[in-house]
Length: 76
Image (tube, rainbow, N blue to C red):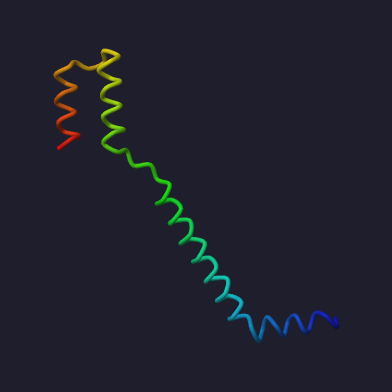
């Protein structure tokens, strides 16, 4: 019982500070996660799109005319 009362007193006297620290830490972790997600999100570049179009054309999945039309859209 000797340890219980000081611990209880800490939670009663400083509980709001502990919860504020916990909330601040959660907010920091959420911000760090969002920052990481934004930095690592893969957004296809024009080069990626052109490479994909070229592969489709080379495999015969699209005609030269379709390739040129899609290429013009990517580059515009």
